[in-house]
Image (tube, rainbow, N blue to C red; front, side):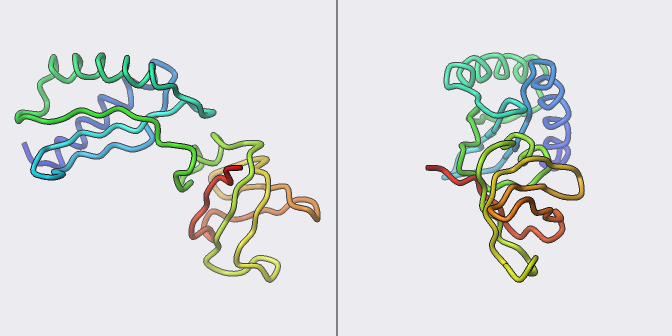
Length: 153
């Protein structure tokens, strides 16, 4: 089975499995690193906050599931981890996970004369993120966001 087919099958299996547990699949990486095949699963709760013991439990249960389904035919290392609070936000789910948290947005083009905006995330939709700024609120279209990160104090 080709790598792309394996990824598609893994993503379908793991996103469904995690969703049934109330957890989002944030990112799935399947690649060679340092000469070994690594399957890295980044998982988080819909509104943030997966703990280390949950990652360990998921590592064990996902390992058992993958062994049962026998999708990956060669030796690999399985890693289940939290994506971390300082990861870049890319999707609507990422922004929803950070509601009421401060974030910094780097824009493709200026909004209100600014190419960089910081504020508290109040809402997120498939089209835009609404943030609270000093002067009130600002709506940032997702299409204008080059990069966004949660501000960690």
